[in-house]
Length: 66
Image (cartoon, rainbow, N blue to C red):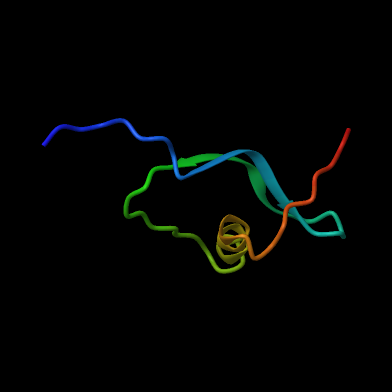
């Protein structure tokens, strides 16, 4: 079976999750996920669910202009 290059399913560039208080949950995160099985592992409270909610479209990113 030949391997065909595919576009990533998700491509994130310099994504940061930060609370209104200024506490940064994660980031800046640059990530490319291919359409295959993968796992997300991390300590409690490190932002796994927040990241997945962003990827699923349940939360919307807010953009900061500098």
